[in-house]
Length: 378
Image 1 (tube, rainbow, N blue to C red):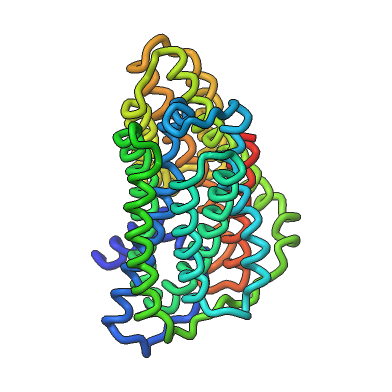
Image 2: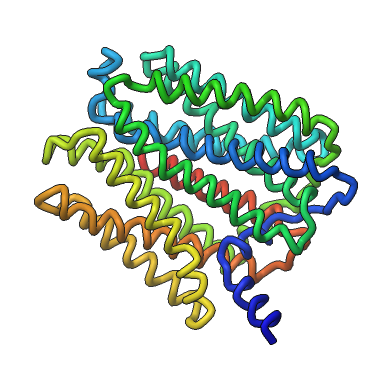
């Protein structure tokens, strides 16, 4: 009885269920040492991708003072959307590479891309260079997530895969959380110190990939065409909801720091702390929303999340003090988490673990998020 209860609780986990969107074959011939180090490399790489995306946010209001380069509001918005632009471009490229390259090559490529992103962003101050650096960073994220998930499928059996996905998603969320805090704390030095430290870590990760992953034979598998999934009304509703929520969150990441700086003279450290609160709320609510979704209609959960997201988005620009601003920021993070959870669980319900449709749905989810995150700031 206890075993059945624990299994039921595990099935209620959003992170474990989201892991079912990836489909792959377990390779029992991998040595334990290689398995552990490969897992650590993937976790740290995904942490770095989240960190590199968000650490810039608190620097937006004062970046022109640090670098000596003035950016208009439109250019700042494009600078943010460039990461998602690169990620969106990377999705069809990833599908094209399916069945042609090893996963370890894609992971190594993503790390090299992140390294050059750090160097370019650390040394560049002109808009074209920074736009290009952020774009290739988004491209690297697409390669990393696709290859990392496929590699995890081969490293661990289905019984362990869910827990491993929990850790991986936590690392990504922790990177998103820590990025604004570090960016805000080191604002007087601009992007140099965070980029320099990140480049050192990435160089070490690349060495580990070459040493321990290059013998891996894991490949991307050919996926079903994406078009039939888009024609399904339920899938289309979920993907449209992801686009909508990611666009509101991405828009607030650009405009909110500028608004608070003008309205309250907020420092980069306080802005970083505010964004960090939203990220923590997002991570915490995911599993809570999944448990709630087991007891209520998921369409109701999705609708409630969208409504709260809209209200929180409008309330972001009305508070009279920075302290009051915390409430709509928390609601924005929570509502975004509820919508993502509802959408992913609806998609997971439509397929089973190992189903041939799973990788295509995973790519569609990531593409929808990237499109929304590009459209919002743009």
